[in-house]
Length: 118
Picture 1 (spheres, rainbow, N blue to C red):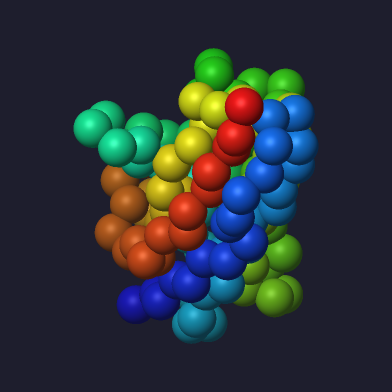
Picture 2: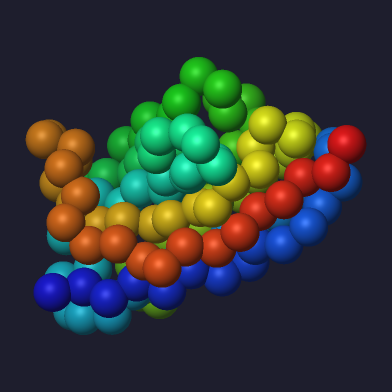
């Protein structure tokens, strides 16, 4: 089992940057695909970015070229660097651990709020 704790959210002006971190517990962290998801008020949760154990990555079209996902398995941590933020990026951001092939995620953090002001 993996426990996940996100940090790094906050309030930023449009065009600014934030880096989210997700710290995981457990010796099997490196075997999981890790994903960042977000959910805005009144909207469904959506995948933002994911990184496999072999460092393959996928991004939502809306964040390509602006967000970068990375991981440090030695620290059981995954990051989401967010640049050129837009008001529509405002959401609660969650990290999750799961399976790269099926893209099913079994373990979730509690979420961190990101608010981008215009």
